[in-house]
Image 1 (cartoon, rainbow, N blue to C red):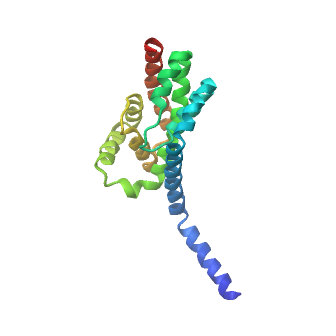
Image 2 (image 1 turned 30 degrees about the vertical axis):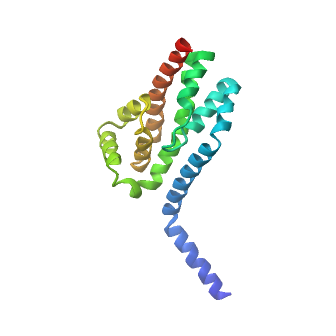
Image 3 (image 1 turned 90 degrees about the vertical axis):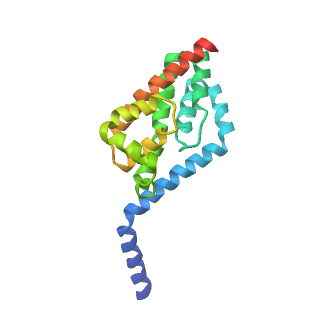
Length: 187
């Protein structure tokens, strides 16, 4: 009995000591799991568009929750803009996308040691140090593969979450408003 109690105390001490690492690994695992599930169920996600604005929001939030894996959000904004009010589609898509981008931020909180040596990480990190808000706004407004990395850098460097959400929302609103208006005029 004494040996078991001693082992439990050692395990408890080890868990408390490594609590921060455990949380970081959990966020990394969670981000990867979400990306995997979205990739596997991508066809089912596309069917959500029949639910109108709510479907557009859900597709946008889930689609932007992936890390690196492309999702159908751009097409959703284009098609949604051709069917519904493009201004609402732009704003709703941006809101969903902003919420979805939190997975990159959370992954960054847990992965700093893994990615610091990456050349693109260092580039984006320098941009973030110079002007984090502007970097997130521009990368959010322009379709590019670096945005997920910017979210990870934001989390890894503890960029204030309120500023992260605001800059991402503004950039994504500009991008998805343009796409929705383009969908309205072309489709």
